[in-house]
Length: 96
Image (spheres, rainbow, N blue to C red):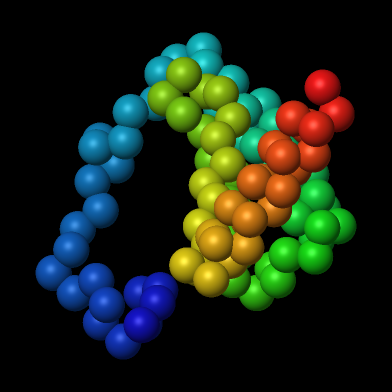
């Protein structure tokens, strides 16, 4: 179940005061940077053949306004990305 339909959040109240916004912090710039970074990561993962059906990238910001990319992936895709990283590390060691 996702979203508000189907009573997923019955009994929950949203408290706007629970979210801290700091005056003068440019959260939009951080979010834009995170959006660009997530698009770059998406492209790189697709380039090396990662099945993106098991991947979710979301742009967000940290409390200080810096960009954050939330990277969620299935266990199968996590193993695939780990194997790609190990292969890249082995190639770098051989080249040096």
